[in-house]
Length: 433
Image (cartoon, rainbow, N blue to C red; front, side, top):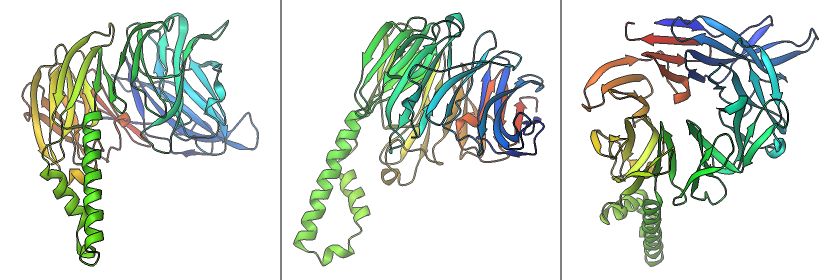
């Protein structure tokens, strides 16, 4: 195991914490840190954000890029996006300063190059923002995407995507959709709004012209796995769950009205669960697998429950954690080409009904990544497990982590190495270690 200290000082007087996120891109792993230091030899101390780049094999630092400065407090998570990396090694991040958003581009050496202001830069205003990782496009341009959150953290109120370039007119194309990711010369976007309109588009990255489009039910989960778009429709389950809950509320009000004294001693949570389950299983959730390049539907399958937590996969396989209202679940593996089930590893979650559908939990396996032979997942956020993809439950190894992992951005996988980030260090694990 190699442990690298993330640079927290650059000639300044101290350091500040920064969200422990990292990005593995090609042969470079990128990680941010905060630093407070005088700016331009002025007496005032200003917080800056440094983006450090390390070689994925040796762990040697390649560059240190100054990407954000000018505040008295460390930047919040909604002020700096995860970095995007182009094939020629240029690095781009979306930055938010006050009411404005800009795209900052650095060279392969880590030297700051230029800053581009999008045409609708003040969409963010003073509310919480969502800054997506920039996607490289032809001709030195970048697809930048950002939006505003609703008070409900699971939903976005509005979004903006622009394809920006250096030199000349900065804007190539734009739309009011959210970017999911890209495959080759196709960037996949989906409509975002108050109604969570079900519409996704595969756009040609150089022009923004639609290559394909598809509709889906509001509230569906849409994920990009390699060259596969997974559309997980939860509308039938959500509608039936709502109907059962309404029926229970009517039953409860009738009992209270008929016998208000006796109803005071009723365990209504237990009654709700009992009434819900007496009606049998909820409807299964349909899933479509769509080719991200062409928009062709590769397969249609039914999930026996709610998809929870991150999905994982790539060119050969799609892995989903599914749990039903009884708490019975499993890690399901599906062949990316045709949706054939390749196996499952079961588990049971206590009291999942009251936790609600599709909510993250320490009881669920949290998927990290998968290739054609292995599946990597977190067990309780304290152990990293590698198991044989074709033989569910057969573990290759289990690694105890030095601290609790609070999200997949803290972990990265590349070329047989695992990268784990915390506030002050970057650890590199290999099979040899």
